[in-house]
Image 1 (cartoon, rainbow, N blue to C red):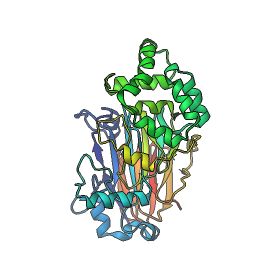
Image 2: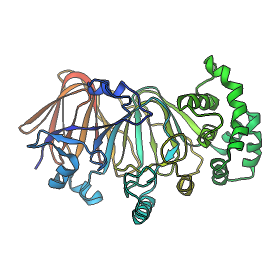
Image 3: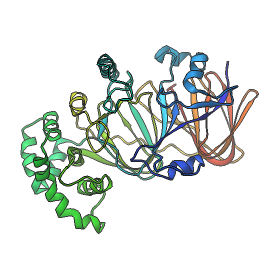
Image 4: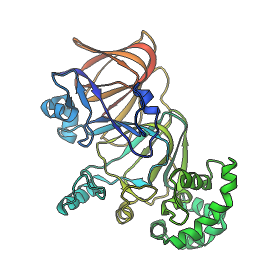
Length: 400
């Protein structure tokens, strides 16, 4: 059985989200405070709906009823579950300092929390499922994020440039990054105030007058302090991450891959995100959500990282971005008006129109998809995309 089905995703209204970008993408009226994420996939906490079947059902239920739609390769590797989750994010305020577990760590943590009787919807629950969550993102706008530890030499230089952090440079010179970071994250309010308040007070005027460069960690400390309304007498240890992690600026079309254990935080902008189908997030600060420092320090990867930027997709051709894992692959499909693209799926695939309008055809089926609309294409389906208005779509699937 092969075919194409229109999909309706789920909106997540997390407090860090913007108000208009996702609403505009989906061509809906903005009637809630935050449109943070738009999910397309079969994760149990927010599954997409399959439209056009006799009754509207979740993508998860549809795949359980029609497991061959996933494809032989997918079922052999991942069983009868869709292995990936596609998202659009609108980051208006910084996300938490976070990382994601390996598959083994997720299985252990999920089992332990189940055994402890912690409900899946408990705010203090860390492991929502037993899967890992490597992820990649492609910028839809100028995008800023934190990504992994800088080299020790770079961190020492950053600390030495700031008198209130100079003692930390001396400390780091005789410590490894893992022990140093643990001490930072477990610091008292008095210690955080000693390190951060001289910078905050000394740079406040320059920040207000837009005199701080965005590659300057001081800028992001002040920005986050204001955006998250962090009180100066209740400083968050996560603020110290701006002096330890790489501050990365991605241009439209560029991307980055986040491996398990790599600490990161999205700071500002919009992106496409594709990940293994998981909602496991271990948070280390800058969030009102549950922060689990013990788990964070247990699984964080303190390797020195030089960010590897994924180059933009070439124009005028279908292009699959490189990914180092088997769980997912993201492709970019540009089209002009009246052009036609034909292909065949090997595994279950989600297509999302980012710009423009297309018709999607397979055998006797035909869908018209406008900006923000999506479809699920079953495995082993010969399909055709016809450009109605110039633009591009993205396709989520497995590496070939």
